[in-house]
Length: 88
Image (cartoon, rainbow, N blue to C red; front, side):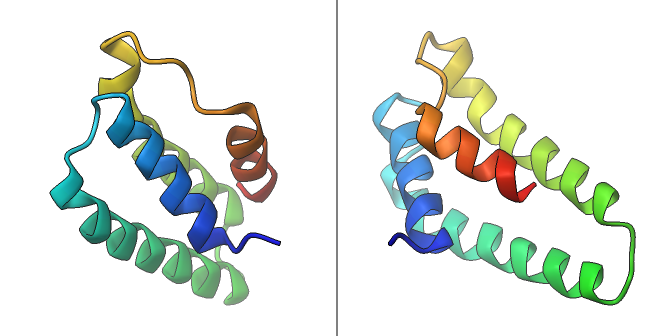
């Protein structure tokens, strides 16, 4: 069973492999995105609007991967995309 951290790393590695992300940024982006997910989970647990946090996370991730998609890379693997959509 994969953890969400492993799935996040796979998605970021895919972006890197498709030219949309530099190797040196992989760990920093993992840390920052993980912190954002944790903060969103805490806010939602405090009864803040989940839809707002889901939309914000989608916006961040779409911006991150947009460069790779514009460069002609394929969309994220279906299994990673459906996993992320199921959470957000």
